[in-house]
Every structure is written in structure tokens, then in C-alpha cells.
Image (tube, rainbow over all chains, first blue to last red; front, side, top):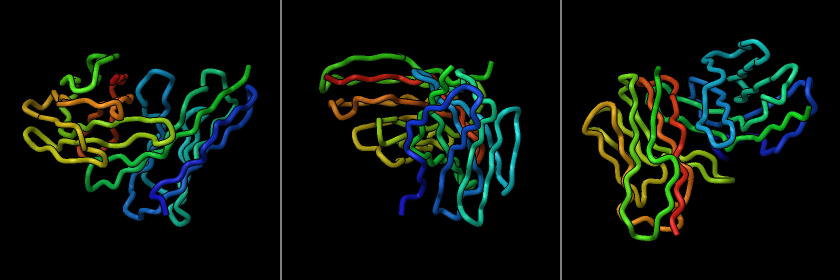
Length: 111
Length: 111
């Protein structure tokens, strides 16, 4: 079983749609759960960061973590063309600083 | 402004010609690491450093070297580059156990 699995995509949605991005993981030692956004020709930038099960909201973005089922999700409400990017889930054990990434999903929001 | 810088941003070279990609951060972070990003494979860690003079292998260290003589700098060295090292490289830094900040990337082509 892979340590992290992320829906492969790509994903194309119309402007204004609700987007759901998902990752599952198998490593119980993961304590921190992140979503990075990566625009074309740019480095990944941190979008959301949480360490507990439940929902965390930031504007149009909601990060959801379910530790018992070992999955995390990112929801984007009222999606905009500027949200078009690759989204990567990432995990941290806390014992060290090594990030374990999903392979990323490319999202395209059509005007 | 807090940032991670990499140079060069783009590099085309030939097989066997030694090269160095520099990385510098201005956040006084202890932890620095190098990743490569390839289509279908995602981000994979090459080497990391927990502090000055402390480095260790990541998941794909073959063909690479690093050094950490100063806290702010973490250069990536390819002694004898080969075409399979053609990739997009990212440097990242963080405090131990905290989320990472990424540089803008270096696109390397080895002919």
C-alpha cells in the first residue's frame, strides 16, 4: 500500500463550482496535514495546514481531516479561474521535518 | 521579505559537466532540503539537512551531493550529471517539525 494516494486528475470545472480534492494515507505517524498549491513554473506554496481531525476554514477553502479513516480533503467554494493550479497534499510526522507528498492533481477552472 | 532563493532558475548542460545549484534562505531555519519533481512521480526528497554540518540522504540521493557550511545556504551538487537528472528541482526550508517554504525552482536539462 502506498504511503499517500491522491486522486490523479486532471480535473476541469466551470467557474463557481465546488471542488473537492482528496488524499488517503497509510502512515499513522503523520501528525500534520497540509495542502500546497503550485502554479505553473512556480514553487509549491502552503495553502492550508492543520493537525487535528475536523474542518478548518479559510475564506473559500476548507481543509478536512479524518484521522480514523486516514483521509484528508480540500474543498474550494465558488471556484475561480485563478484557482487553476496543481494541488498537492502533504504530510509531516513531527518527529522530523520531511514532507511526504501526494503526486498532485491539476485543477482547471473554466471561465 | 521571508524567502528561499535558488540559482540558476534554468540550466541546460551536457552529460558529465559538474554543476552546482545554490539555495539560500533568510528565515534562520534549521531544516533545509532538496526535492526533485517529475511528471507522474511527484515531489521526491533528495537530501536534507537538520542543521549546519548535518546532512542526510532522502529518498533519491544517487548522483547528488550537498553541503551545509552555513545555516542559510544549502547547495546541491551534481558531480557528473546524466540525462536522467533532467528535472525540476526545489529547495525548501523550515523550522524542525514545521511546514516548509519552497524556493521558485530550478529547471535542469542534461543533454
